[in-house]
Structures are given as C-alpha cells and as structure tokens.
Length: 241
Length: 144
Image 1 (cartoon, one colour):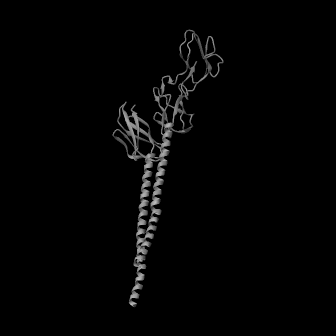
Image 2 (tube, chains in turn red, cyan):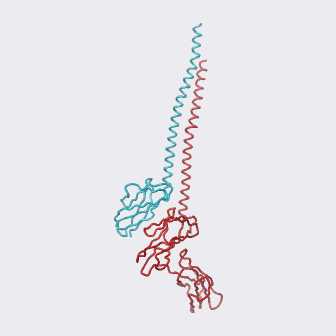
C-alpha cells in the first residue's frame, strides 16, 4: 500500500518534469535553434549575393574613348562602350585629379557619349581620363593619355590598312570619302611594278570610306565601303584584298 | 482501537500533502530551470545572430582606393565604398597612418583624405586603406 502511494507520487512528478522539459524544448531550445538557423541562412544568402557581385565586377568591360571636339577645342567628348555582359552604372569620371560625378547606365554591347567636358588646355599638359563604375572598377581611356601640345591636341592618326594576299604586277587603289564611289577619289594610286603586301593610307577623319582595289585584268580585289569606327573602335579600318 | 483508526486517518492525509509538496517542488524547480533556460537560450541566440551579422557585414565590405593625387608634399586619397554596408576607414602609407579618427563612409559613398607625406618623384608607394572590421584595399602609386 505504501509502495503504491510513493510510486503514484513519483509518477505525478515525472509527468510534470516531462511537461516542463517539453515546454523548455519548445519555448527555448527550438526557437534558439531556429534563430541560429535563420542567421546562418541569411549569411549564406549574403555570401551568394557577394559572389554574384564579384563575378559581375569581373565581367565588366568598358572601353573609354576620349575625343577632343576639334584640334584646338577646349571640349572633349568621352564615349564609353560597354563590351561586357552586364549592365554598367558609371558613377564618376576622373579628369586628372578632378572628380566629376555622373549617373549613367550603359547596357551591355552599347555605348554612351558623355560630355563635353571643358579642359583648361595648358600647353604640354597631359589629361588622364578615367571612369569609375558602381561595382568598383576604374577604367582608363583606350586612347591613352590626352596631350595638349603646341599645335593643339595630339589626336589619333586615321588610316585605312590594306592587306593584299596575292602579289601582282599592277594594282590600282582608290579611296573615296563617304559611302560611295561617286566623284573624285580622295586617294588614287597605281602601283605598276611588283606590288607589296601591305599599304596604309592616311585619311583625314573617322567615318565611312569607299575602297576599290583593282588589277589590270580580272575582277576587282575589293570593292566595298569600310568604316573607321573610332572612338568606338580602332582609328583604322582593315581591307583584306 | 479508536486510537489506531485515528492514526490511519491521519496517514491518509499525509500522502496527499506530500504529493502536493513534491509537485510544488517539481513545478518550482522546473519553473526556475525553464526561466533560466529561456533567458540563457535567448542570450545565446542573440549573441550568435549578432556575431553572424557582424561576420556578414565584414564579408560584405567592398571598397577601393579610387584615386590618388600628390603635389607639394601633400597626398590626397579618394576612397569609394561600393558595398552595402557603412565602413570606417583609415589610410596607411609606409609607417604613417591617417587620420587619427576613423573616417565613416556610408554605403555607396565617397571620401577623400588629405595629409602631408614626404616623397620624391619616382617613389613607388603602396597605399593601404583598411577598415575597422579588418578588410584591406591596396593601391600602388608612383609619385609623378
């Protein structure tokens, strides 16, 4: 009788103890574990976002082309071409040590012309122009550091570069300014002796040129328009004849 | 006989009282343990979450030395915080650290630091920007 009584009392305490234990588990331990788990999840999520940010930063590829508006003009235009695979947000343009805040989005594989920016044109001075993106990249000018000299800006020499794959004894090279072969050609040269392989024709500016390369006999080696795409591209155009 | 019966009646009350006392003790001790564990677990969870957030902020820091200018023994350093968290920055060039107090730069913000630093033309300097959380950004600069 006594044994049954003690067992009954211990049973009540065991039930209470179990209830308290379960209560502690549900109200303290499990919420703590959930909070920790949530913090870990947020941390992992952030790490993933940062990985993406770093990858996108590495994928940024901007080409800056700085072009004075004239040989002696104080104004320069900055053309930025996004050749990367991500949209780029330009936040600053640097002209030497001067910070010029900008707010320009450039979608991938497209360009944006900024400026004109007025420079002080001190003879002998160099102008280093750069662009900073919101992902922390700083891109220098593809056209190099701009130099202002005695005769104004030292700007690019534009040319048409011709490569002839076959040697011939007679070659006629003609170049017209513009997109057609109407009117007098800007360049007209007959090479009567054994011809070379490569020629470079200096032209006055960027833009479209019509190039015709013929031999004495046979079909023309080249008869088409070429474009010097500077500042979005190189200051020359290739002709493969 | 009556005395025996009286004693047995008294013994019938004792188990009830002892069960109540035992239950009360269990409840009291359980309640204390419950309260203590709740407090301890809450503090532990908060500490853990805070440390994870701090760690997340540390790895979230993104900043660069964007530009450096030098002239007349004066150096100017521009810093760009392109990350998503505010940062506290100092600049170190050689053995010299500037400024004394941390510079606070909000997320997406810029700051510039100007200080005197003796250097000769052609000197190659390594400029280090470091944050309170212990991240570094390096910039190699050749004095013009």
